[in-house]
Amino acid sequence: MNPRFRPFVFLVVAAVAASVASAAAPKPLKVLLVTGGCCHDYVNQKDLLKAGLEKRANVVVEHLHTPDKSTRPPLECLTNPDYAKGYDVVIHDECAAGVDDPAQVRNVLRPHLDGIPGVALHCAMHSYRVVKDFARPQKPGSEGALWFDFLGLQSSGHGPQEPIVVTYTDRTHPITRGLADWTTIKEELYNNVQPPAVFPSHHALASGRQTVTNRKDGTKRDAEAVVTWTNEFGPKRARVFCTTLGHNNATVEDPRYLDLLTRGLLWAAGKLEASGQPAPGFGPPERR
Image (cartoon, rainbow, N blue to C red; front, side, top):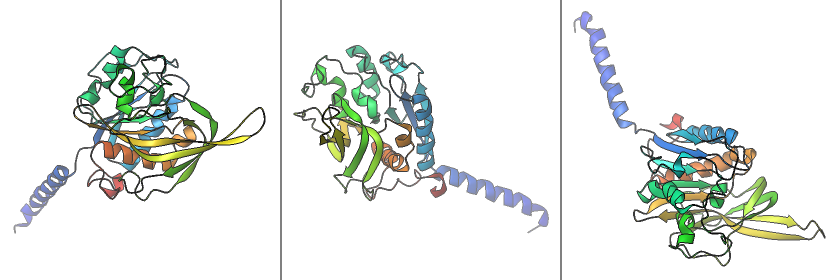
Protein backbone atom coordinates (compact mmCIF):
# COMPACT_ATOMS: atom_id res chain seq x y z
CA MET A 1 0.00 0.00 0.00
CA ASN A 2 1.17 3.47 -0.83
CA PRO A 3 2.34 5.00 2.47
CA ARG A 4 0.48 8.18 1.60
CA PHE A 5 -2.88 6.37 1.90
CA ARG A 6 -2.26 4.63 5.22
CA PRO A 7 -3.47 7.49 7.46
CA PHE A 8 -6.61 7.81 5.32
CA VAL A 9 -7.35 4.08 5.52
CA PHE A 10 -6.81 4.12 9.27
CA LEU A 11 -9.27 6.99 9.70
CA VAL A 12 -11.89 5.23 7.59
CA VAL A 13 -11.55 1.99 9.57
CA ALA A 14 -11.69 3.87 12.87
CA ALA A 15 -14.80 5.75 11.76
CA VAL A 16 -16.55 2.55 10.69
CA ALA A 17 -15.65 0.83 13.96
CA ALA A 18 -16.95 3.78 15.96
CA SER A 19 -20.16 3.79 13.94
CA VAL A 20 -20.73 0.06 14.53
CA ALA A 21 -20.04 0.42 18.25
CA SER A 22 -22.43 3.37 18.46
CA ALA A 23 -25.16 1.44 16.65
CA ALA A 24 -24.69 -1.56 18.94
CA ALA A 25 -24.88 0.43 22.18
CA PRO A 26 -28.51 0.98 23.24
CA LYS A 27 -29.63 4.46 24.13
CA PRO A 28 -29.95 5.07 27.87
CA LEU A 29 -33.37 4.86 29.41
CA LYS A 30 -34.87 8.30 29.96
CA VAL A 31 -36.17 8.46 33.51
CA LEU A 32 -38.34 11.22 34.96
CA LEU A 33 -37.98 11.60 38.73
CA VAL A 34 -40.87 13.45 40.38
CA THR A 35 -40.00 14.98 43.77
CA GLY A 36 -41.32 17.65 46.08
CA GLY A 37 -43.83 18.24 48.82
CA CYS A 38 -44.04 17.64 52.52
CA CYS A 39 -41.79 16.13 55.10
CA HIS A 40 -38.67 14.99 53.22
CA ASP A 41 -35.32 16.35 52.07
CA TYR A 42 -36.16 16.15 48.39
CA VAL A 43 -33.63 18.84 47.51
CA ASN A 44 -30.82 16.42 48.34
CA GLN A 45 -32.61 13.13 47.77
CA LYS A 46 -33.36 13.87 44.12
CA ASP A 47 -29.61 14.24 43.51
CA LEU A 48 -28.73 11.15 45.55
CA LEU A 49 -31.16 9.10 43.49
CA LYS A 50 -29.94 10.50 40.18
CA ALA A 51 -26.29 9.83 41.01
CA GLY A 52 -26.97 6.36 42.41
CA LEU A 53 -29.10 5.19 39.48
CA GLU A 54 -26.86 6.61 36.76
CA LYS A 55 -23.87 4.92 38.40
CA ARG A 56 -25.57 1.53 38.33
CA ALA A 57 -27.41 1.46 35.01
CA ASN A 58 -27.55 2.95 31.53
CA VAL A 59 -30.11 5.58 32.45
CA VAL A 60 -30.39 9.34 32.35
CA VAL A 61 -32.46 10.76 35.21
CA GLU A 62 -34.15 14.14 34.78
CA HIS A 63 -35.97 15.98 37.52
CA LEU A 64 -39.53 17.21 37.79
CA HIS A 65 -39.06 18.95 41.13
CA THR A 66 -40.72 21.62 43.19
CA PRO A 67 -39.18 23.10 46.36
CA ASP A 68 -42.68 23.49 47.77
CA LYS A 69 -42.93 21.77 51.17
CA SER A 70 -46.71 21.55 51.47
CA THR A 71 -48.94 18.49 51.13
CA ARG A 72 -50.27 20.01 47.90
CA PRO A 73 -47.10 20.68 45.92
CA PRO A 74 -47.71 22.47 42.60
CA LEU A 75 -46.28 19.75 40.37
CA GLU A 76 -46.75 19.84 36.59
CA CYS A 77 -47.97 16.25 36.61
CA LEU A 78 -51.16 17.36 38.38
CA THR A 79 -52.37 19.45 35.45
CA ASN A 80 -50.47 18.31 32.35
CA PRO A 81 -51.36 14.78 31.20
CA ASP A 82 -48.37 14.87 28.81
CA TYR A 83 -45.83 15.53 31.55
CA ALA A 84 -44.04 12.21 30.89
CA LYS A 85 -43.93 12.45 27.09
CA GLY A 86 -40.61 11.15 25.77
CA TYR A 87 -39.67 9.26 28.95
CA ASP A 88 -39.27 5.51 29.36
CA VAL A 89 -40.02 5.33 33.10
CA VAL A 90 -41.47 7.69 35.71
CA ILE A 91 -40.34 7.53 39.34
CA HIS A 92 -42.90 8.94 41.78
CA ASP A 93 -41.10 10.12 44.91
CA GLU A 94 -43.37 13.04 45.74
CA CYS A 95 -45.25 13.62 49.00
CA ALA A 96 -48.61 14.98 47.94
CA ALA A 97 -50.76 13.70 50.78
CA GLY A 98 -53.19 16.61 50.47
CA VAL A 99 -53.94 16.14 46.77
CA ASP A 100 -57.34 14.44 46.63
CA ASP A 101 -58.89 15.77 43.42
CA PRO A 102 -59.68 12.76 41.19
CA ALA A 103 -59.14 14.82 38.03
CA GLN A 104 -55.60 15.71 39.12
CA VAL A 105 -54.85 12.12 40.08
CA ARG A 106 -56.01 10.98 36.65
CA ASN A 107 -53.54 13.45 35.14
CA VAL A 108 -50.75 11.82 37.16
CA LEU A 109 -51.89 8.38 36.05
CA ARG A 110 -52.38 9.16 32.36
CA PRO A 111 -48.86 8.17 31.17
CA HIS A 112 -49.11 4.88 33.06
CA LEU A 113 -52.53 4.12 31.60
CA ASP A 114 -50.86 4.68 28.23
CA GLY A 115 -48.25 2.05 29.14
CA ILE A 116 -45.28 3.97 30.58
CA PRO A 117 -43.78 1.94 33.46
CA GLY A 118 -43.66 3.42 36.95
CA VAL A 119 -41.68 3.31 40.16
CA ALA A 120 -43.19 4.51 43.45
CA LEU A 121 -41.08 5.34 46.50
CA HIS A 122 -41.94 5.94 50.13
CA CYS A 123 -44.39 8.85 50.48
CA ALA A 124 -45.82 8.27 47.02
CA MET A 125 -47.83 5.55 48.81
CA HIS A 126 -49.50 8.21 50.94
CA SER A 127 -50.20 10.61 48.08
CA TYR A 128 -53.22 11.11 45.85
CA ARG A 129 -55.77 9.48 48.16
CA VAL A 130 -59.13 10.65 46.86
CA VAL A 131 -61.33 9.43 49.73
CA LYS A 132 -61.38 10.61 53.32
CA ASP A 133 -61.62 7.09 54.73
CA PHE A 134 -58.41 5.84 53.12
CA ALA A 135 -57.73 3.70 56.20
CA ARG A 136 -60.64 1.50 55.08
CA PRO A 137 -59.90 -1.03 52.33
CA GLN A 138 -60.94 0.34 48.95
CA LYS A 139 -62.33 -2.03 46.36
CA PRO A 140 -59.93 -2.43 43.42
CA GLY A 141 -61.28 -0.61 40.40
CA SER A 142 -63.42 1.75 42.48
CA GLU A 143 -63.10 5.53 42.59
CA GLY A 144 -61.56 5.30 46.06
CA ALA A 145 -58.85 2.96 44.77
CA LEU A 146 -57.80 5.26 41.93
CA TRP A 147 -54.16 5.58 43.09
CA PHE A 148 -54.06 2.26 44.92
CA ASP A 149 -54.86 0.44 41.67
CA PHE A 150 -51.63 1.89 40.30
CA LEU A 151 -49.61 0.96 43.39
CA GLY A 152 -51.14 -2.46 43.89
CA LEU A 153 -51.26 -2.07 47.68
CA GLN A 154 -52.98 0.27 50.11
CA SER A 155 -51.27 2.01 53.05
CA SER A 156 -52.75 4.54 55.45
CA GLY A 157 -49.97 5.43 57.90
CA HIS A 158 -46.64 4.57 59.47
CA GLY A 159 -45.03 3.92 62.81
CA PRO A 160 -42.14 5.68 64.55
CA GLN A 161 -38.65 5.92 63.13
CA GLU A 162 -36.92 2.73 64.20
CA PRO A 163 -34.71 0.25 62.31
CA ILE A 164 -36.53 -2.02 59.87
CA VAL A 165 -35.39 -5.60 59.31
CA VAL A 166 -35.88 -6.21 55.58
CA THR A 167 -36.44 -9.83 54.53
CA TYR A 168 -36.78 -10.82 50.89
CA THR A 169 -39.78 -13.12 50.75
CA ASP A 170 -39.48 -14.00 47.06
CA ARG A 171 -35.83 -14.79 46.36
CA THR A 172 -36.46 -16.13 42.86
CA HIS A 173 -37.74 -12.90 41.33
CA PRO A 174 -35.23 -11.10 39.06
CA ILE A 175 -35.39 -8.00 41.27
CA THR A 176 -34.40 -9.83 44.45
CA ARG A 177 -32.33 -12.75 43.15
CA GLY A 178 -29.04 -12.87 45.07
CA LEU A 179 -29.79 -9.85 47.27
CA ALA A 180 -29.10 -10.23 51.00
CA ASP A 181 -31.53 -9.33 53.78
CA TRP A 182 -30.55 -6.14 55.59
CA THR A 183 -31.51 -3.79 58.39
CA THR A 184 -32.08 -0.10 57.79
CA ILE A 185 -31.21 2.82 60.00
CA LYS A 186 -34.15 4.40 61.81
CA GLU A 187 -36.89 4.46 59.19
CA GLU A 188 -40.66 4.61 58.91
CA LEU A 189 -42.48 1.31 58.45
CA TYR A 190 -45.56 1.94 56.32
CA ASN A 191 -48.54 -0.21 57.23
CA ASN A 192 -50.64 -2.38 54.94
CA VAL A 193 -54.33 -1.62 55.32
CA GLN A 194 -56.05 -4.62 56.92
CA PRO A 195 -57.82 -6.60 55.80
CA PRO A 196 -55.91 -5.98 52.58
CA ALA A 197 -57.77 -5.25 49.40
CA VAL A 198 -56.94 -7.88 46.79
CA PHE A 199 -55.21 -6.06 43.95
CA PRO A 200 -54.92 -8.82 41.35
CA SER A 201 -51.42 -8.03 40.03
CA HIS A 202 -49.75 -7.26 43.37
CA HIS A 203 -46.70 -9.44 44.01
CA ALA A 204 -44.83 -9.11 47.32
CA LEU A 205 -41.03 -9.20 47.24
CA ALA A 206 -39.94 -8.16 50.76
CA SER A 207 -41.37 -7.65 54.21
CA GLY A 208 -40.21 -5.32 56.94
CA ARG A 209 -40.28 -5.93 60.68
CA GLN A 210 -39.92 -3.15 63.22
CA THR A 211 -39.82 -3.28 67.00
CA VAL A 212 -41.95 -0.52 68.49
CA THR A 213 -41.71 0.61 72.12
CA ASN A 214 -44.79 1.89 73.93
CA ARG A 215 -43.87 5.31 75.34
CA LYS A 216 -46.21 4.93 78.30
CA ASP A 217 -45.27 1.56 79.75
CA GLY A 218 -42.11 0.59 77.85
CA THR A 219 -43.58 -2.60 76.43
CA LYS A 220 -42.39 -3.70 73.01
CA ARG A 221 -44.20 -5.19 70.07
CA ASP A 222 -43.22 -6.15 66.53
CA ALA A 223 -44.97 -4.59 63.55
CA GLU A 224 -44.66 -6.17 60.12
CA ALA A 225 -45.69 -5.13 56.63
CA VAL A 226 -44.88 -5.67 52.98
CA VAL A 227 -42.27 -3.05 52.05
CA THR A 228 -41.37 -3.98 48.46
CA TRP A 229 -43.56 -5.34 45.68
CA THR A 230 -44.46 -5.22 42.00
CA ASN A 231 -47.71 -4.50 40.22
CA GLU A 232 -49.19 -4.22 36.73
CA PHE A 233 -51.49 -1.33 35.96
CA GLY A 234 -54.07 -0.40 33.40
CA PRO A 235 -55.20 -1.94 30.13
CA LYS A 236 -51.60 -2.07 28.85
CA ARG A 237 -50.41 -3.70 32.08
CA ALA A 238 -47.67 -1.17 32.67
CA ARG A 239 -45.13 -2.55 35.11
CA VAL A 240 -44.85 -0.81 38.48
CA PHE A 241 -42.17 -1.32 41.14
CA CYS A 242 -42.81 -0.04 44.67
CA THR A 243 -40.97 0.25 47.97
CA THR A 244 -42.05 2.11 51.08
CA LEU A 245 -38.44 2.48 52.22
CA GLY A 246 -36.58 5.74 51.76
CA HIS A 247 -37.52 8.41 54.31
CA ASN A 248 -34.03 9.51 55.36
CA ASN A 249 -31.04 10.49 53.24
CA ALA A 250 -28.84 7.80 54.79
CA THR A 251 -31.22 5.17 53.46
CA VAL A 252 -31.61 6.79 50.05
CA GLU A 253 -27.84 6.76 49.56
CA ASP A 254 -27.36 3.26 51.03
CA PRO A 255 -25.90 0.98 48.30
CA ARG A 256 -28.32 -1.78 49.29
CA TYR A 257 -31.27 0.53 48.72
CA LEU A 258 -29.89 1.85 45.43
CA ASP A 259 -29.13 -1.68 44.19
CA LEU A 260 -32.73 -2.71 44.92
CA LEU A 261 -34.13 0.42 43.31
CA THR A 262 -31.98 0.02 40.21
CA ARG A 263 -33.19 -3.52 39.71
CA GLY A 264 -36.80 -2.45 40.23
CA LEU A 265 -36.41 0.33 37.69
CA LEU A 266 -34.84 -1.96 35.09
CA TRP A 267 -37.49 -4.62 35.69
CA ALA A 268 -40.27 -2.07 35.21
CA ALA A 269 -38.67 -1.01 31.91
CA GLY A 270 -38.22 -4.61 30.76
CA LYS A 271 -34.42 -4.36 30.94
CA LEU A 272 -33.67 -6.85 33.73
CA GLU A 273 -32.61 -10.43 32.98
CA ALA A 274 -34.07 -13.39 34.88
CA SER A 275 -30.68 -13.68 36.61
CA GLY A 276 -31.12 -10.26 38.19
CA GLN A 277 -28.49 -8.71 35.92
CA PRO A 278 -29.20 -5.76 33.62
CA ALA A 279 -30.02 -6.59 30.02
CA PRO A 280 -27.03 -6.19 27.67
CA GLY A 281 -26.11 -2.54 27.33
CA PHE A 282 -28.09 -1.39 30.38
CA GLY A 283 -25.60 -2.14 33.13
CA PRO A 284 -23.11 0.18 34.90
CA PRO A 285 -20.91 2.35 32.65
CA GLU A 286 -17.83 0.16 33.16
CA ARG A 287 -19.75 -2.93 31.95
CA ARG A 288 -21.07 -1.44 28.73
